[in-house]
Length: 266
Ligand SMILES: Cc1cc2nc3c(=O)[nH]c(=O)nc-3n(C[C@H](O)[C@H](O)[C@H](O)COP(=O)(O)OP(=O)(O)OC[C@H]3O[C@@H](n4cnc5c(N)ncnc54)[C@H](O)[C@@H]3O)c2cc1C
Image (cartoon, rainbow, N blue to C red):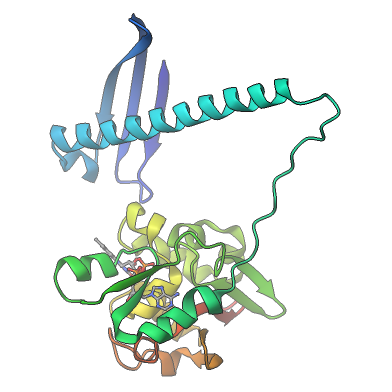
């Protein structure tokens, strides 16, 4: 039995579930029958039974896939261990190499020009595509790159990698202390699904005049770092947000790497 409960980030809704799993023999396989008792209130309760069932089926499918992969990798690892001599040293994880953003992102972006777009969280770009407001042939997906992500205090400044998600920005304790305005505005950015995927850099690049982060960047005199094969440049927020949705960075086909603000402001 699995019991779980949660609260919507803004505290307007609750969800609780009790999941019973019953295992039964099914020839050479084992069948698992799941029965879920779900109680839900708030905005999410407006979704119909069918939508909730679809989402739950997807989650269970993902859970089953991962469990299967874990079980198979564990059994193949123990098979390898059994066949290896006892003196074989344990395998160690190779640390992830940092990505050459220039070669992997900035150069193709500059080369493809209007035919390419960076995909970060996709929370603005994908709706634009589905509304046929954007047309291009290539997507450069930066969402799984180790860079440019992270949050650091750098001397008197506070640095946030452009690929850092809104959810991370909104819950990071350092941000809460050093740039509390960012923590305060994040719950107003869409809803938690948007915050889990959307990124600070995507919001800056999209530059929606109604968006929270660009407004905060202007209020705090933040600086955006942009990278292209021509080099890197720092752009003050006041110069960055001059052209609304299609801003200077898009036209220059640059990658936004980070945003920096003086610490303890706002
Ligand atoms: C239903 C809904 C509600 C929303 N509500 C709000 C809200 O209340 N407040 C708010 O502020 N926002 C809101 N948003 C927008 C959301 O915050 C987006 O996530 C954000 O604007 C874009 O971030 P992203 O990482 O998803 O970027 P993407 O959608 O991946 O990209 C957006 C644009 O930025 C470019 N881009 C992305 N990263 C970079 C980079 N590092 N360098 C250069 N270009 C880059 C892309 O090429 C694209 O043109 C909402 C979105 C949705 C779908």
